[in-house]
Length: 121
Image (cartoon, rainbow, N blue to C red; front, side, top):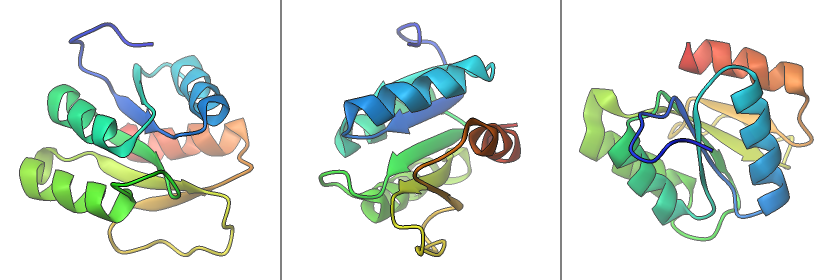
C-alpha cells in the first residue's frame, strides 16, 4: 500500500491476510501511509528501512514474536524505534512492558483511529 522506499508512518504486521488488509485499509483511510508485513522478520526489516512512527504487530504471529521484535527495534534504533502496539484476540492481556499498548480483536475503526492519533500523531 505504500510506495517503495517512501517513509511509512505505520507498519502493520499480521500473519492473517484478512486482518492485515483490514487494518491496512483502516490506517490508510485515517490518512496515514502504511506498509504491510505478513511475518515478524519482514516487520523488523520494514521498520529498519522506513522508520515508521508506529508498529501494529499481531501477538500470535510466527517467530520472531512481538517481545523479540520490540527488543530488536529498541536496541538497534534507539529513540528512532517506532511505538509498538500488540494486536490480540486475548482481551485479558494487559500491556506487556515490551510494548506501548494493546489493541483487542475484534476492534472497531474508532478505536484504531484514536490509537493512531495517540501513537503516530
